[in-house]
Image (cartoon, rainbow, N blue to C red; front, side, top):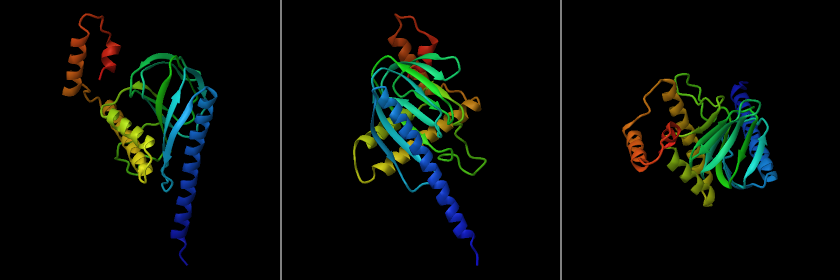
Length: 233
């Protein structure tokens, strides 16, 4: 009797269990660390029927000094408040960032990081299994989740992040599905940004140039730094 379909189904079920276990472990470990530092996990949503597990979580925290050990899944952190952040991959040279709203920090799986914030803040984390976005098609763009990302801005992320927060904060019958879709779309946007950067595409689109002109016009009487221009939106 043919057993391949049954074996395939069992294999997929095991993969689902492993993916969801890894994501939940990452979520729970981070929540415990943040709670010990005085922070709080506000809301969390994850669908339970997918092999490619994704979980979106909203946090609030006081100023903290937080050492996060290696977790089994990568996480994309999105700042929801302006804050001064210092730190980076543990064991490497730490940096100081003037993090704007909706700036991105991507921590790869298996990487320990240390972060310090000197003011209360809110942030959104998206925990995802390695195959949450990457498919089997070798020609498709892939999310380089093994590469850390610090204080980056990506066009089109702001509105999606705010919509994801709304889904997390507004209970409803389809909130988990909506949050899952928005979290995946944020990962897609990040992947496309990485692809354009790797291909050397010119990031100075008409809208970006318009924002730069507006920023310069508003700060003509001040010293304008390149770093400020690079983070202006």
